[in-house]
Image 1 (cartoon, rainbow, N blue to C red):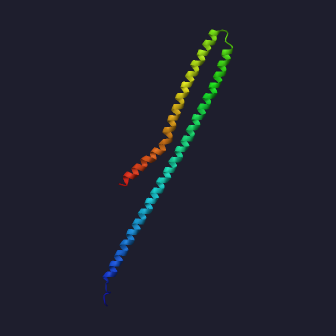
Image 2 (image 1 turned 180 degrees about the vertical axis):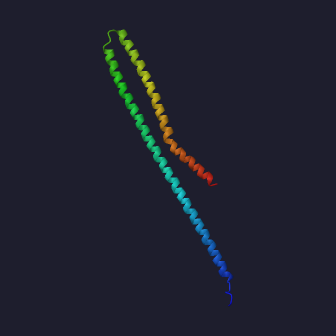
Image 3 (image 1 turned 45 degrees about the vertical axis):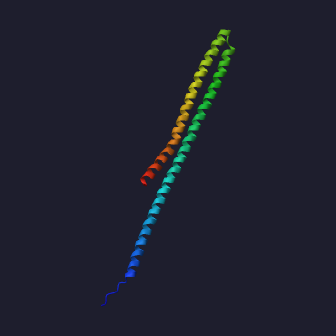
Amino acid sequence: MAAAKKDPAKEAFETVTLASNEAFKEGFEKSVAAMNDFTAFHKETVDAMIASATTTAKSLEDINAAAVAYAKKSMEDSVSAAKTFASAKSVQELIEAQADYTKSAMDAYLAEVNKQADLMSALVKDSFKPLNDRASAAVELMQSQR
């Protein structure tokens, strides 16, 4: 039986074709994996933005509720003080009532300012945390790609 002749050109063509098919397949698989990673990263970023917006909305509700509660209490205290002023029996009693009211109103105001400052600080810290975490993840991802 005669041995089949080997055509070197055909063998070289088949080798090159096989190697390029493998390289293409490998490159395609890497591209698909990279796109999947990118999509997952993007989804996590969108989730972080939603979490940030949700936290911001909740914090703004808390700030608004505190402001409304302060305004209501302040109005009630003012009406009560006006009644006290109207029932004063002397100028001295009126001046003392006015001084007491002014002191308590200023104390309440300063307490409210501190409370609102704390609420605003918490809003900024809590609403930016998910976004900061995503920024850190992006930096880590870029560094891992080096």
